[in-house]
Image (cartoon, rainbow, N blue to C red):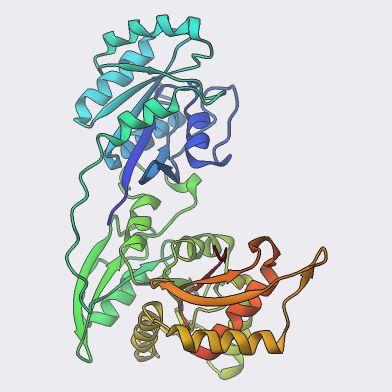
Length: 436
């Protein structure tokens, strides 16, 4: 199910990044009392009551012909286009400015729901001053203080009231949905074409040719698949072209809809920091992952070369130690036959269930092999465990005190579960709970 998207829009220096950080629950955006610090769109997830949604922080919309100002307006326009609801933020201390009125004109044309937030209303006496903002034409202005966190509840109540109604999803079938993610020009579109044996998507050496996600169904070995091809994820500082109506957010949506995520790495250029950030999106979403090293035809191919490259991947992607690695060439189709079996295995493991009695036999064997640690004179006691969810497989371990479950012992239990049941290609989650 697609998450709703909320964009925070306004002229510079009205406190958009401060509110964004409060909604995201961490200090992601740079906050500085200087106009124009946030120059591109920044994304995170936020929660309010039972609603989880994506939130976009934008650079301030500012008049002028300087290249940076033009780029900031273009990025804000893309954010508005992607959003389901827009928070229009103004500065309660300064009143309505000409720039606010210009932003309002842009928002009128969007035909999107707009919630007006009057920021920097830090004390009750100032609340009377917000009524002038009715003249902007967006209904009730909500006085808030980003610095002190005041008024955010009422603001978010208004925001979530505009979210689309949740539509009951159709019953799951056996179709495996998988997406391809990676930085631009690693060969995602070429790989789609190679798998389908046809020119389904545009292939170009120009980075960023693919502008949006493209769904392509196909069947292989009596198994139905849907490939979700996505545009390359660029570093934030490089998402400036006005023609590129694509964003990281759309790739995140593709990940949300996937059972398996293929993380592509360019064998030519090797591993860079951006590869790890991109792979982290799939890992954090709890999706099954297959690491695909593309353009392997350009490398001297022998077992030693594969082993050396695999060791580099394992060193850089320690958080994906469960993910299988496939070396192939989309261009020449070398070793491409090895990919689909790994996708199927990862999908199967992502949905795997373990019987409670068998699971507890493994846990008891693990306890005998490595007794639980003692913390401050108290020993962790594991009573029993059960699997509570799939996609990803999730286990609850009932203990005498969850505070005694050190992450190293949790990791030990995860390794024993993997040894016993496989789970290659999928993350697994373990939660310690106190038995009531």
